[in-house]
Length: 263
Image (cartoon, rainbow, N blue to C red; front, side, top):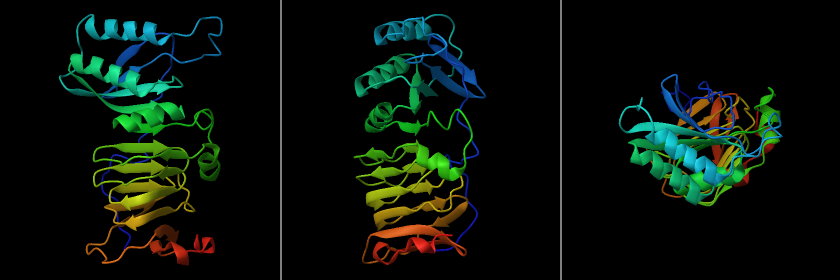
């Protein structure tokens, strides 16, 4: 495998997550060409004397926001749901998606710092960015950022068009299909076939690794290093690990891998 310049890919780490200010109301706004649906927080230290918005109250307000007044969006526009610390299950996420669909909007991505919400969104098939409440408050080094978040475990197949983001290590019990992508500030471990696009050490940590039972990636990235999958697939597969060396990204059989090889 040879290193090369990375093509334009949706998971480029230079694209920041939207910075938004929450209050106790549902908001739908256009920010820098992105349509954002902002939900009120589960809790707020600044508004501790105010009762938190219940799901029923939030749902009713969302319906009002979507159906009242002049629509400022184009038909079939994609929406990023900014859920932050609000806990949402599969049923509630589907209800939000259905409400958006009724007004010609499509739920595309979910931003959250709740593990349960991230799992629910990934299960339904939406792209997910799970953000760390610790790293969102202050800057840390890449190593500290990746260790501050607990690993994200997903028992599912990452289908085409689905993107998972997490500020720590991602462990997938399933496959990553072509067109699917995973971005992690820590390691990426795939207990299955890796045939999509993955980016470990996304915040610049070159000690991150990518491990999988069957390495067939379209493209892999560790920190700023990039490599494409081989044109000719091997006839036999072994559990393998991709890591960074002074010469670029290298792939070895897991049984032969030694952490001392990391730069």
